[in-house]
Structure formats: C-alpha cells, structure tokens
Image (cartoon, rainbow, N blue to C red; front, side):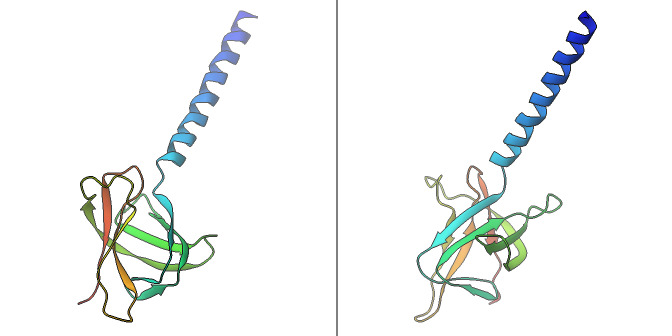
Length: 126
C-alpha cells in the first residue's frame, strides 16, 4: 500500500512538472500580436491597418520570422532577419518603424518579441 501511494505521488509530481513546462514555453513564446493603425511595409509586402501575428516559426533558426493574419490562416511574410538589440529604455516596444516616402507605407525596421532583449531586423533591398 505504501509503494502504491509513493508511485501515485511521483506520477503527480511528474504531471505537474510537464504542465509547468508547457506553461513556461507558452509564456516565453516568440509569438506576438501587433496592431497597426495605418499601412506598414515589410520586405516585398504592404500590410493594411489591422492586427497581425509576428512569430519565429522554427527552433532551428531563430532568425526566421513569419507574419500572419490574426487567425494565423494567411502568411504575408516569411524571411530571414538579422539579430538586433532592443533600444534602451523601451522594454514594451514591439516594433521600430523607419521613414517612408510620401504616399508609401512606413517600413517596419525591427520586431522585438515581448520579454526578450534581442529582436529581428528586417532586410530590405536598397
């Protein structure tokens, strides 16, 4: 009877550990919802005002970024980025924007996943 209780306790601790790990991975995920009030540009695409999902779709290369619609059913951009440090004093900023010519959408220079020090600078052709 004592062995049965010990095994039950060990199984309970193991299940709790798995649940805590899953929660931590969801919290530290490289996925963010970003809302824009005006059109913005990424390399090769212009995004209308709205909410988009920015994410790192693979653990194999953290420099790959994908941008999708809010429901994650349409991918608008997937490409390689360059690592960049988050600007000092801006812990909550998720994107930095560049300058655009009149009539052009403002380019997104970089995406900074919430809670992370490093971000992803987008590569534009000159």
